[in-house]
Each structure stands twice: as C-alpha cells, then as structure tokens.
Image (cartoon, rainbow, N blue to C red; front, top):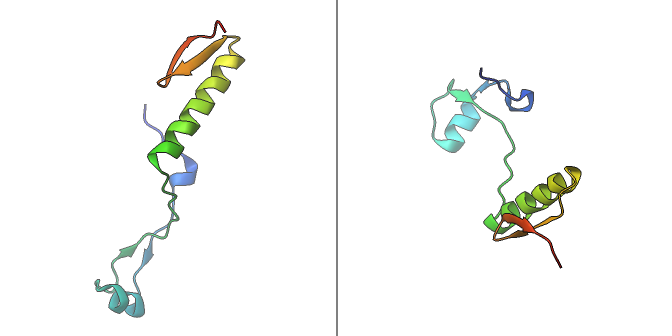
Length: 75
C-alpha cells in the first residue's frame, strides 16, 4: 500500500512571461511553489534523539542514548 501525506500535495502553476525571463525557462512550463526547510546534520540528529527518548519513555523504558543507540540507564 502506498500513501502520500496530504501536506505534500500541491497545485502546480504555469510559468508566466516575466518569471520565464527572470529564470531563463520556457514560458508555460510547470511551476512548483513550495517552501522547503533545510536543517543541519546536527539539528536532525538532535531531533531524532529527542523523539527517540520521548518514545522510549512513553513505553516505560528507562534507557538513554549512546551514539544514537538506546542502552540501559543504570546511573
């Protein structure tokens, strides 16, 4: 089964004459208008670790992350 997040479905527009000239593309080409957020590798790793710790706590597991892997927290 395949699925698509609703937030990833967008309408496409057509490139107008002014935009075509500005970016050197053919007028009438398809145009996707979407905001993308780029994160650093550290930001991504930190968020992944934060969400993993929260999920482990919800499961009632007393674990900590070492090198992004869960290990028993015996301290």
